[in-house]
Each structure stands twice: as C-alpha cells, then as structure tokens.
Image (cartoon, rainbow, N blue to C red; front, side, top):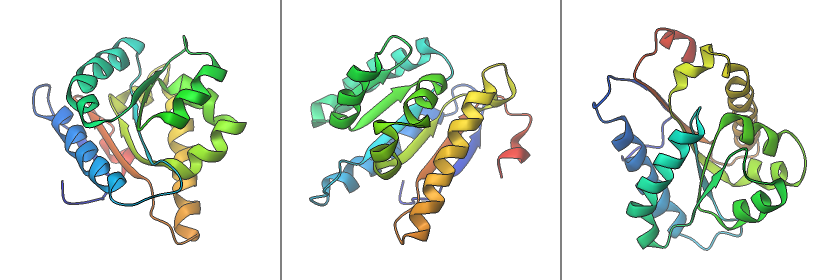
Length: 174
C-alpha cells in the first residue's frame, strides 16, 4: 500500500489479488485528491473478458462510488464518441484490451490518456499467451512507452500491477 512500485503477482484464486488492486486504488485516490491538478489522473483496469470488466465495475462501484469516484466501462459496446466523454470525466476506467487498443492507438484520446493514466491494473495477465494476447501485449508496450516518456520529462512513471492465478511464464514479465 505504501509503495508506488510496479509488480506482477502470481497467486492462487482466493489469495487476495483483488485486495492488492483495491489497496493500489485507495493509494491512487488519496494521491489524486491531494492536489489541484490541471489534468484528472486516471486508474485503468484491464481484463480479457467483458464479463470480468462488468463484474469488477459492479463490485467497485459499490465500494468507491460513495467516495465521489467516477467509474466507467469501456468495451466493444461503447462507441468512440461516448467513450471520449466518459474517459475525460472518469477517475477509473475498466476495459478490455481490444477496446483500450482501439482508444489509444491514435486520435484525440491517446493525447490526454498518455498524460493522465497513472495506475494500470492488469487482471488475468496470463492471457498474454492466449489468442487475445497480441492486443494485451500491444497496449502494455504502448503504456510502457508512455511511462518512459514521462520519466524522460521528469514526471512520475505509470505504476503497473499485473495479477494472475496461473502464470507459468512469470519470468517473461520481469
């Protein structure tokens, strides 16, 4: 909780991976309330399936919305124009890799997202080895580039937290 270090966690189901995400979100919310920032910082949750995104959205709205936190879902059902407005107003974005790839590959959204996303939570990161892996790998690479550019500009890097219940290729994430 008291660190801004990035991490990869491989732990069995029920071991507390969601709690790790929630503690990181609490730290993010405390830090984003701390100063009149010109740009609204954002946390991003990525899961390989729309059903997982919707499940987390429901769960976290119950926990974080009462704190004044705005959560938005971005999936294939969300049009790009609606998504752009949702993104600007949101504190936390929950999406699938494919939608995030579409939103950040080019255009207006990528301009401010490269600056505003400060926390990235990647659920089921082992999916990088599945059919949907290329989209996940592309967005992680893109956001790592954003993070590198921030560090070069003397800004804080993006914090990445990736979790998996089964991660046989854990060494690849070092």
